[in-house]
Image (cartoon, rainbow, N blue to C red; front, side):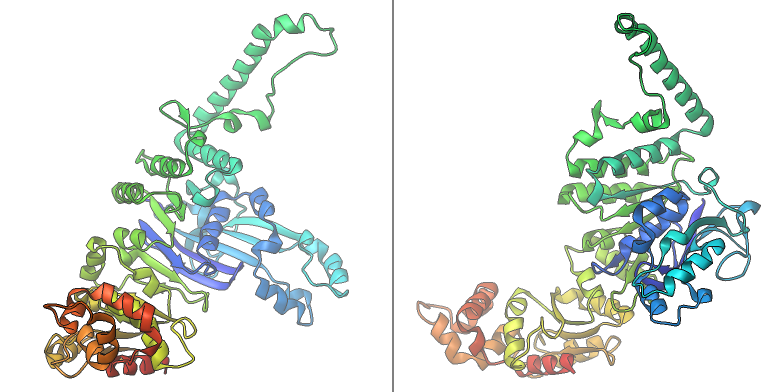
Length: 522
């Protein structure tokens, strides 16, 4: 199977430099809104398309790294230091000497293709004249767009070694995007001989329509003016062809259905159709039921390499966390891979109920709590423990985790380098449940916090004992058989919500939670 082995970027959008190694079947890109997930898919699409017009349509000023432009303009502006933009795609599974060579950043023999945007030598005097003035941008009008193979030969669209398509759910109703998708799928499923025959027959059918059906109208006109049918490239088979589902054009369907149809059609396993499928946030416009169907369809696909950019924990966990690449907003050149996550933990998250894996993956500090009551009250307790501060102001994410899942999340946090305070009940045996149980997981960045008194076995007991008057005032009235403490234990969520709503700012913080807050803020 031909697939993309590695992507190297230089001065592309937010990446001054980036190197990503890929799995030959599935790659899941996650990150914040400005982390560069879409940029990675865009880079792959541009270089594999080998289309100068596509690059031009985006504009070099929007594709070049703004940091490299700013740095150059603040320097002495020597022509030799003019920035270049490079996108390299290393390919595996392709035995073709036309693409094999050392024309790449490693300077070693490899198979691949590259996009280079650089100044055109003959225009250097023009560039210098402009730079000698006080300018705030580079004169990209004098830059050229070049596609090369690693053998240093020019590379053109008809030579593409990989057949691919990009599906962007945000552009699902965009006419240009739909037409581009349809053309890509048509080219993937029909070979050159078939396409040439189809184009010829389509043009001939148009001529026949003109000669047979427009004749009666044209015969009434003078010889100078006639009705005809367009046969130029802007009105060819590839511009007019559409995809239908049950005889209904897919662009007449709803956005969610269009997204599902386009993805499902692209995933079909016809031999020699697509090599690479790029999916941009496939969760958009899809209900939970259809998202599950889409994931099942992705699982069943073969003979294709998939790249999925997503914000969805559901997609990332159900497909396989080991295939996740995390792009950082703070450190763009240092992605994190989860390929070293244990197989059992990856499989656990595949089957576990809805989780907050990506929330943990995309933060720098987190407090893990054991249930809904702790989650409801944690922000108020945090403010009370650290007056003038909050979880939001300190960039701390509070994540509710089922008690049996703590170790899975801690393994993930260790790989990610996230600072985590895990707050849990001692369940009447602090030493066994909170110390010995986690001895393989605690570290300088991961700590467990629980009450050391075995009699204070749960969060509710600790809250009641430390806030007896407040809790009695709120819950004692009307109690017949249950004590206030037992009422809080049997109605954990409701009791926590009432305390938050009426007395949140007055609550005393159990000492182990205060220690967790102090530690996470350090």
